[in-house]
Each structure stands twice: as C-alpha cells, then as structure tokens.
Image 1 (cartoon, helix red, strand yellow):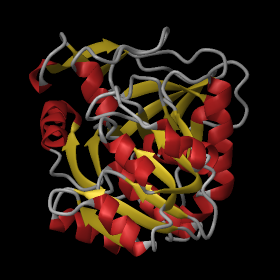
Image 2: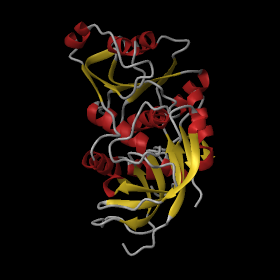
Image 3: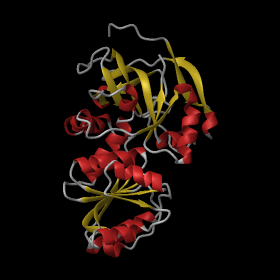
Image 4: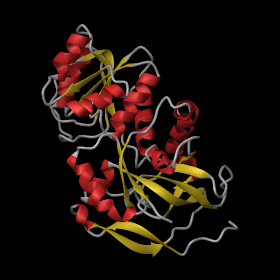
Length: 335
C-alpha cells in the first residue's frame, strides 16, 4: 500500500444493548483495508435509525461487518487495499458502510465509495450515502417512479423523507407527504412537496383522495407499517407500487387483498445493509450518474438538523429518539 497506517483510533462502541448511555468512546486498533477496500480517515458520520436499533440489540451487523455503529461517513482516503485502482490517497470521499462509521478510521468496499460532490463539506457529504442509496433503490428502482407520476412519502421530515421529496420532484413527480406537526409540514413543502399532511390533525387518505380526484398515488414509500399499509392501499392508483423500508408501527399487517388484485398493485420492500457489495456498487454507480449532477448543481441537498462531536454520540441518539428533528443528524469526527 505504501502508506503508513494509523495504529489506534478513537471510536464509539455499544457497551451492551440498551439506551443511549451504552454508547461509549474507546480506543481500538485501527482497521486495515483488505482486498477491494479503502481506509478512510473519517471527518463526519451520519446517524440513522438502524444505529438506534443496533444499540438496542434489535439489528445485528451482517456477518463480517464491524460491531461499531455507523452506516455512512465522509472523509479522506488514507490507504488502499489490494486491487483498488479507482481511488487514491487524499481523495475526498463519502461511503456506505455495513458498520464501523462511529470512528476516526473505517474501511469501506471501494465499490461503495463516492466522491464528495463539488461544493460540499464533509458534514453534508456524510449525510448522503445511507439515505440516497435507500431512496434511489426503493423509490426509483423497486418503486419505478417516473416523471408525471405521484409519490406519497410517509415520514417526510426524516432524512429519508427529505431526500425522497427532493429527488422525486427533481425527476418530475408530484409529491404528497405526511409529517407530525405544522413546522415539519412547512419544511417538507419548502423542499418541494406539493402537499404535506399533518397526520395528527388530518386524514391522509381523505386528503389524497380529494387532491387526486379519487385516482390516488402511483408509488408509496412507507416506513411506518402497521395499519398504514391498508390505508395506503386504499389510495393507491391502478398499477401502483407500495415499497416498505421500515415499520415503526410493527411488521404485521392485516390486508384486504381484493383491491390489490383489482387495481393490480405491487407490494414490495427491501433492506440495504445486508445486500452484497456488488449490489451496493451498482446503486453507487447509478447515483454517480443520475444524482451527483443534481447535488453539484444545487438542485438537491441534504437537510442537516444538528451536528454533535463523536464523543457525544449518545446525545445524538437521544435527539433522534425524540423525533423532533427535520433531516439528518451528523457526528463530527476530530483527527
């Protein structure tokens, strides 16, 4: 590799399953990149709900992945594993990880690494991979959203939601979204949502039926699950696609299959973390071709709610658990 590697690093580990207090800064041996991997000196790391689930003992890392939380980072390449030719030392990059992002150094498969978009800082870049990979593969691949169609995004003020709203609008869709209060709804509409629905005071089924003249929506991006799925089906258009990516209200649902059959609906979903490097690399290539130009042109941007030093990861988790944030929470990592 030809580059001196760091011996140790500060990172944040999960001492035991539990609340935010189980996150603790520790010293560990720095990782070494294997074949097809790069070593990144991390400058910022995104915080995501799967991190919270892992901390609670409800979402184990895939086999072979780091036990440290953290699914996305931005920083600079400091070492290359065998066979890596597309990156060089000191390249500014962001990367999707299967774990290990809450640290000063992490390894990432070279295929899952992307350049920091022109004009972006590291905090903004660290907010990209997990949400943009997720939205692209679920809304535009599995959901097959096209220009002129209509998308419903539940949880519009989340990192996933703010990304989905912007990308759907950038590709010519009409966007409905749900959010939990007037401020969140206003933020969603400022990002481009055609109508944000306060689910605590409005019935999204009735609002969408009225707004679409009874036709409904072509694609639903659902991270709620539970009884929302049956309500989603009620306002889906013929040949509509329903994509599940999480289930805050639980994974078990009760459905009337008659409208699924008569409207020829597709119910699908996916997870990202356990997918192969090859699959994630394909998504990365699509993002670089289709989405990175939008980021560099200022047409799409991550929404950063708040940043915390790495050592305050517990506070970042506490904030995310309140669900009061709009957009992304990011950890700043000192050298």
